[in-house]
Length: 249
Image (cartoon, rainbow, N blue to C red; front, side):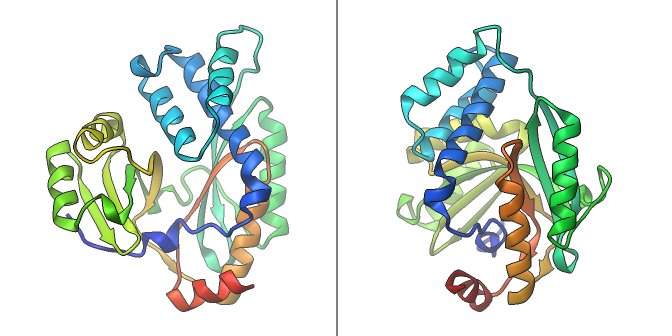
């Protein structure tokens, strides 16, 4: 198991918290509805729904919003969403994966392609950048959840693959198919996590300067503004100095 890395750089997202709050709630509600519709409406009997609800709670989505999303899945008259993954390149050749959930494949494809083109990117074929990532489960804990050794032992007992610990906290990595079991075991030992989700973990990264990061974040922001887009992942890496300058712009 490895030590600290620059994962905070890779998953960095510029502020805009007030602006994106309602949109975030909407996207998480959509995931909850789809998860409940595909399986059992009881989170304890539906691992995907359990993870969706858990992630929603960690982002302060109100209980009544979560309950409405689950009930919507059982109404029988809701929209049928299709899950689609798009892959492409952003500024400076950085790899970008876009996960979408849509009721109109043509609309979403057109919008995503246009967004890439307008922001210095290039939408590619499926698999064009996917080989640069591994699909993994990630469970995040704050720094005060325990020291690195404590988290490491808990992760080993839970069946995790890797741990990254640093000043900002701990990330426990596991196989995507093991996320439900690993997160449950970790909760029993360490308590509630800050975040539990499936992500694309870069196996290779692209170093970015300030200008490249500014262009990349413009692309990421534009993609995330699309109601059909659930998650955007990139493989950028940038120095602390560049990230500090980015936050000041």
